[in-house]
Length: 170
Image 1 (cartoon, one colour):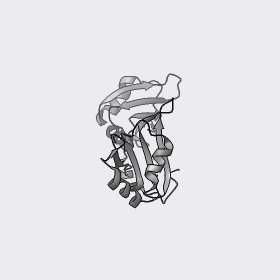
Image 2 (cartoon, rainbow, N blue to C red):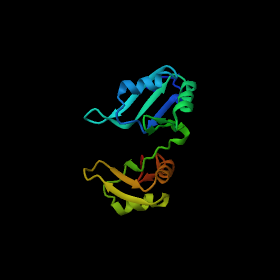
Image 3 (cartoon, helix red, strand yellow):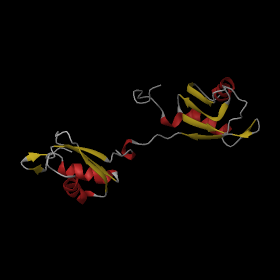
Image 4 (cartoon, helix red, strand yellow):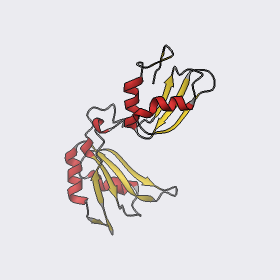
């Protein structure tokens, strides 16, 4: 199931299940959870020899079914194992930060040194490395320690900074 394309996906209906008895197979896993509602997806992680790894995932078609399974099975003993169920909560888009730190720069003069490049970007934060392509393509790379600093440099310099009469692009 592609969660990105399915606009009806109920994120509160996706469960992680831990401490599954080692002797349980897929059929037993599915049967255990189907009594709580319609299952969209069910996965029992298994080793190469077919034995389960002790955890799996169940995606119901609605959160009510997931909550019913949680109430009946979470922290309950099942065939000698204490099952642990939890809702898999996806990150909110606003919580997902573009964590890029490596920048590609175009328009750097061919005669520039790595020190000049470092000096240009150092005001935005701690730099881990710089590299200038040696093929005379006017391209370079700057790697910041953290993404916020990289973002600040893009906002300040991209298509705004001129060097020797040429605009650079970050």
